[in-house]
Image: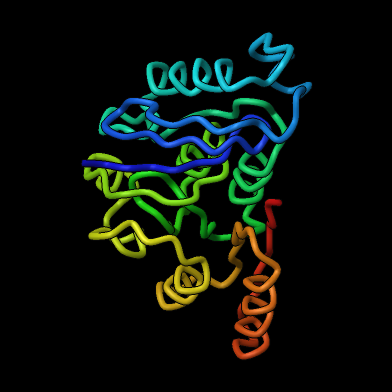
Length: 197
């Protein structure tokens, strides 16, 4: 049974199993101008959150084997859009990010950066989904058997793969400190940190 836990829409904790929303927590905020503009959601409630996640599952297969992995820009701003542009411009050569069904991933293709990060936020835990792993490239997934989320090990894997200008998405200040230490120990490596709060 696949099991995915995310935080989305006002940091609401959501659990998805086998393509179904099975748990929805309480949103920590009541209003988000982005969701109002793009989805017409005036107030974040558990019911609205559930409806939006069910829309994402139906629309692009979020947290399912039917997941669309390659996408164009969705908002024209945001972390995934910025990272996509940086790869296209050659400012970075890889992104260590997370994707449901994969866990930590090392990505070099702009449309996969956008597709894996643009419409899914706050991935807390996930379990393997083979179709997503195959689309991202099994060799680009830190731990295809368990879909582990570990941005430090993912960064070390990216370095082992030969990447030198690496953007890393993280959630903890502790990981930022560890990444700076990795950068100090590897003089020819530049790490760009994107911290999500």
